[in-house]
Image (cartoon, rainbow, N blue to C red):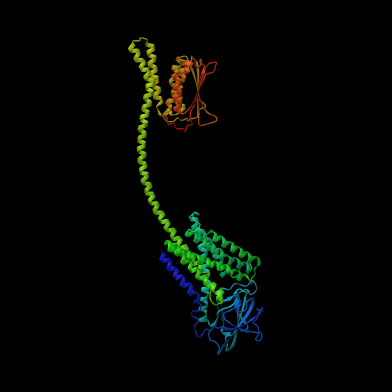
Length: 623
């Protein structure tokens, strides 16, 4: 890829350098006249050419007013004699290859071509040729005068450059080549710069702002588009001073943004340099806007353009150094791309300071566009490589994720089997404990009765009934339906209502405000059942109560919690009851439920037991 880019850069350099002279490369023809000495006359009358005795003086072409007559501005007439030994049989063409700012072409006393507006602000034809055709009826034998009227600004390299006169069939192709080099290529460069700006902005958006390199490239391309528009636009919507101040000031904006982009790519910090140059440029253009005019604009802005050239030279040296030290191919591409820019800009800088701007087309509008194009192609190439590497990495990560997922699934299955075994073991242990604490005691009592030969059949029957009741309660406590508070209390009511009434205890069950469903954590139903059972048994057997209320409500201040209360009208708690195993078992089971357990015994009698269950989504670790 890098060899392709460098080859393209080399071809771009050759085209750029060859294009500067392409318009003049095929002018050697016996039929084409290229005058080098003509006559001129400064005159503000642009309606008709001055007369023979108006005071014409000789000048050499190219005639740059800033060189030959500093301070000259306004209008200047030029004329050259064309002698025809016989009437022409073919039309004649006239090409004005370089001039500034605008011109009209006259044959004898007749205007045959106009570049547009000839009063300020002049039509901006300073970077496109002008062509005129002389018809056969005007080409009689004898001497004819070709007059050219040029209007330009003082100290702005105004004047006239190459002039070609000859058969239209030979001159017209030369004009088209010059027009292509000077104007069409500028339009192409403008279009490419705008597309680069949009493309770089799109790349920045696609990267979601992760890197500001493409954003800087978009800003640089947009700034250079404004510069190129000065080569293309005929009639801007403001005065020449402000228009060229904006367009030429964009050169400094481009230079700074492009420098920051290079520094970002190379990952070097030159913040102080950029800020210093920004202050210099801002101060310079502020001074121009406050104190400058049409006559001083070009002279005052050239030092700042020279600083931009020096900045580009510094960037080239920096890029080559990074390439040599780190073998950084990106630095090499940047260096060669910047070399195109310095050649194009240096060519125009040389014309302005040491040669004649009217003697050769300008190339500065092409260099930065090629530079940005090459850098953009290289960055997109690097971006595509990164995407390819990212895709390959994503495939590896996907494979690794699938492997880890399979391993996790196997581990999860193993853990699920272990958890199932543990749950079965815990359930077996809990079931065994409940049988031992409840049914086991009754069976031991029955065994003792039978062993001792007790003949009290009623006592034996009650003990057997209690054993069966306890077994049924245990079976109720391990079913799936017991994981709901309402269902659990309902089953408890079904089992205990008749035995308690037989003991003379009336039980009121109040569960109307209990939400449905009202879930319990797995394995916790038995603890809640034993707490309520113990409270009811104590009320019937030890407190001497004849009335008890079981109330299940939803807390008003916390809708996720349920409060279960057992209230009796017995004799209350004595010292022996408070220290008994029954209450201790109730507290232990409440702790396993992670519930709040309180017991109160008013002075006037009765017991009030309160159990506040944990939130419904609370999972207990103690089974």
